[in-house]
Length: 469
Image 1 (spheres, rainbow, N blue to C red):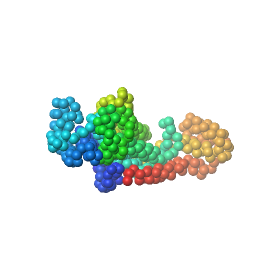
Image 2 (spheres, rainbow, N blue to C red):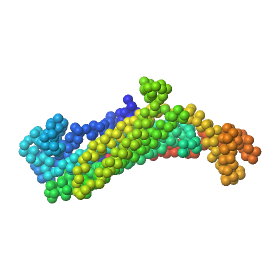
Image 3 (tube, helix red, strand yellow):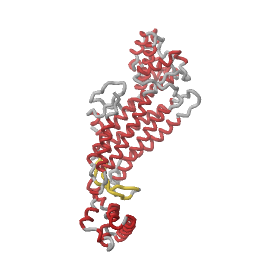
């Protein structure tokens, strides 16, 4: 069982929507691909038609008995994909095809009241909103699972000393846990971003009619729309006709793009850290996995490479979805991007699965990290030595002199400590014991460990607010 599945199974990842009761500890995230399946879309449309009928019955627009019949038969049990496809080949209209097939199972007198005053684009816009709302919850569950993995990894390695690098060069010592804590904090912000999008999706049910003026629903149109949304478990709809704007859908796509960039950064860093020449981490692969058809020694980083790819492909799709915000007049047909919204959601799920496999099974080579700290012969601690020397000869002079000694050490192939010990103007300022302390990487970590603990505490506290009551 993968790391993410273990976390889901223990109930750590239960998502409570604002419209459901407390879920049991065994609940799992739905597969995003299932959310966007043709069968699920059809069910969503039927749910919407039932909600419409119920809302209209609440307001005495249609008879209660008709609404009850429509709701009772709002199931794909009565609308198979085969029958739907056959009907579509005849009428060439998705809504008409569905209604034609569905009404065969309804009592004739009740069928007169189905889809009463509604228009196709509203039904399918709302179906898309329901799918995206469900997808958002599923992706948050995955991000929370990854948060657990990252918290464990950060805590386990909060004191594991390694090289801190800037611009690809050795800079100062850090801990691997400190590095992971930056991934952890970014992941939490992405959860919060998705939660914000989720709030807007909950208000994006729409039932405003052909040009968004409620004309087909009569004088009670606004009340019908509000009741309709409530029956679907959504919040009160936005009052504006957003069909042509598509900004919430674009925000959803761009949020996934941002998440992909976050995991692209993680993937890229782990890709580099497991290079043969660095070797500080290793992507654990099955023993039977083959790295190359001609080079048996290779261990190719497939999951980290996948994260890099997703960070390129997901944003490109998001750009096309955002282009759909530019529409002419009241209600262009913008349904062609629905497939892309499904694709980007499914791809995001695949990306997070790859991330869970990578991070949940990551091998951290602490011994190699320790070895790499010594590669520059103590240069990585030059800042610390400069600060210590500044108290004795002044900061500017100390900085200039240490730079000269570092250049000399590299030219002569000796350590920085040796260069200091050979410098008649600098050596007298330090005892051997002082130099031992100054060149101990494990004692020059700033507040890295405290930082790790603070980020973990922040995330644990933030998790309490993930689920609305």
